[in-house]
Image (cartoon, rainbow, N blue to C red; front, side, top):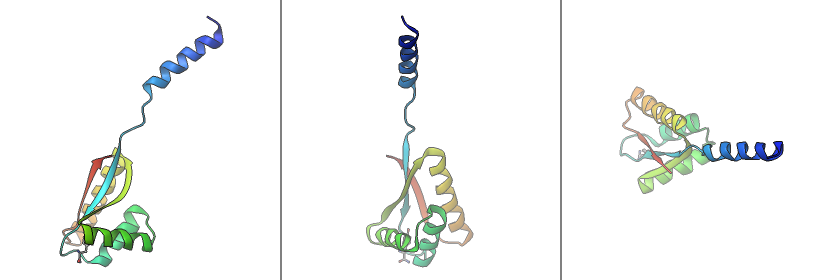
Length: 102
Ligand code: TYC
């Protein structure tokens, strides 16, 4: 086997091992108490949304009960969910956030 062929075999073997990581949707849940303005600020702060995008997502959650804030690798999704829950708790709002594999 030529050097070039050998290298191809090694690269193919490597390629087979490298799978893309699973992705997770981070979702915000509606409730009757969290102020709309607070949800908009959370979406801007935690998910780097513009005020316009954050308002759209907040209204979708308000009307439909749930909305997707973004899609991330597991570690990033866990961190986003924690940030939302912590900031909501700090301000004593019942806002809930969850994640689900895509
Ligand atoms: N339903 C809330 C209200 O009427 C607003 C709200 C929107 C709360 C989105 C949570 O994830 C949420 N004040």
